[in-house]
Image 1 (cartoon, rainbow, N blue to C red):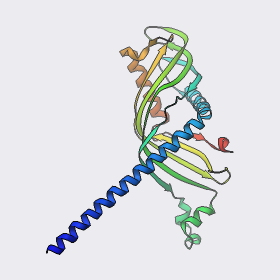
Image 2 (image 1 turned 180 degrees about the horizontal axis):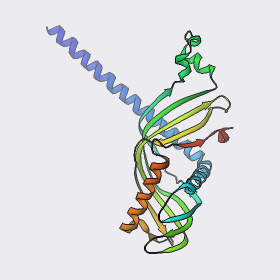
Image 3 (image 1 turned 90 degrees about the vertical axis):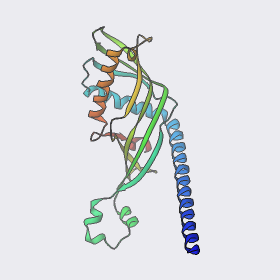
Length: 241
């Protein structure tokens, strides 16, 4: 009995040690993923600003806002803070042809992947971004209970937390790292806070009625365009080629 208890206790200690070691490895991996994301974000900032400006302008043309019309982005600066990922999970999206074709059953999965010119990887994570120096300047016609005019507005500072899904499409026709497209969406409504200035000094988000109207309208547009099942496609092929 004494020997049995010792063996059982030793097994529990080993299990705990392995769990802690696996947890440490996961934390270390996540640390390096965030480090690489940070460096890539900084290195590609000019391109990302351009992509975001184009993407936002495209979506503003489709937007249905009760308090604004003819909105257009004048300038976009994403800031120096980069997103931080937690609860990172990566999996592959298997091509159904792999499972239905009898001719391919004798090949390994790695060999099957090499047969097709494209491949998809799904990345899921919780993302947090606190960007105090983010600036998005827009021009448009604004209509509220307090004013009706054409003017510039500045969206400044962004605090965001939510769960995201990114599908990376890999293609052999694109140079290394062969990522042709990233398809992005929030899997649920994110938590979002920001400031909106008019005339450079008046913060509309400090005015209860207007702030709730702006926030609700923006969340409705996010739901329509980038919250699942909606998707945002980012073409990376032109950037990498």
